[in-house]
Length: 581
Image (tube, rainbow, N blue to C red; front, side, top):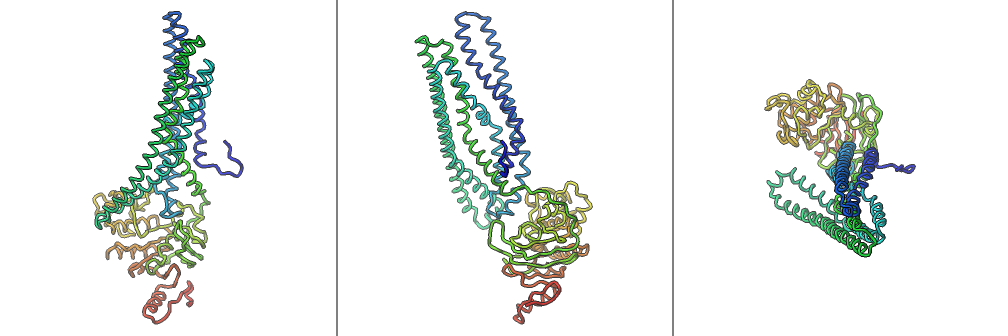
């Protein structure tokens, strides 16, 4: 199918279109398989109408050998077809899994916490699993239903009418199954996502739940959510299972009805005895794909819903084209009229921030809680996109960089440091498989954690565990600092980097900030404690999302002290040092 001009095709459709040669092969094999399905009917017709009247054993042996060969060919082709469909599912997964992972990473940065977590991965699994099941085979066999009905009509009109009536009833059942299972299956999928999110959040906060006696109450919420999920899932299963059972009964009744009609025609000498058996087998074969489709309808509905969600998600978060590769930044960070809102929210958190820093400068960002400090630094590193304004490195807005390329020039230590399962060295080098050991050790020494690391059981090869569980909060924060410093990035942003540090860690942090500035990096530090801003030369004061003061550290801190003692109103100091009311 060719998309209309101006209509953007779905990435999933494009991925399936890449498998069109495989689908064509499945279609050809389905044609041959369905022709071979006639073997049983023709064999019985020949036995009853040719072998028995002639009592010819050689004819019977010849027919048996021929039928055995055809059955064997049918089985081989059926096996190959099912394996090709499975390979199509695997190829689809291989084509899209990196793209789906990218959307999982980017989705929270666009819609905040109101996202479906790992649902896109589950959706891709659902589509792949359905393609590897017997469900698609049924849909490939359904178009051959008219052929079987036509042969039934060729045997006799009454036999054809009986088979046609059965086909109409079963197809109607299929449509009813589609109508009745759509909403329950959709609700069950939504409840499953809620249940999984609750379980993940509870696992991540297990210590809090146990220590504060919240486990029982969260378990009750889990039980309620799980009961709703099970009820919704059971409704969908009951509908599909009940209609599937009805379909099987009707198919057996139809087969008996065809036998009865055939017997009636034989009594009136309008058909031969072979036609009775052949038409019975043929009618059963004709309706088998319908029966199989109903049996796999729940999987089909689930896969279809997953397909739609993935398509909508990929349209919402389109693939980013690779921008022109810019030169590494070396001289300036500028913030121009920056206003920020949290992803998925229109409430402005940071309003109209403007300042500039040159290479070698350090900025301390201070202010009360909820003043917008962390939101500001998220925008500085490109994690949050601004509502208005720009963040620029050497004049180029961050949007002009790909995240992978920008990350080479940025070091970021968030408030909540989270390490990944792997070794200490892998976490420091950001899981770069080509990272030189010298660079890893240099970053660790700059962060003041080299001695701490080599005292660990396996040194740099120590496994940190899932989410860094094998390290203390202070150790994780210091390893996170080394990760931020790895590769000598031009812009280093540290959000409350000393929240879990002892005196030794504070001193190492100060030395690291000074060393980074000495080599020409720009360092931005968010801090509540004075020790955090000891090594910076500029201060930005924030309150209620607005910039209250910016300028040389001594001048701004003196103004803050005056405000607190009631001696004078706070003033905003420009970059050039000119005081403004």
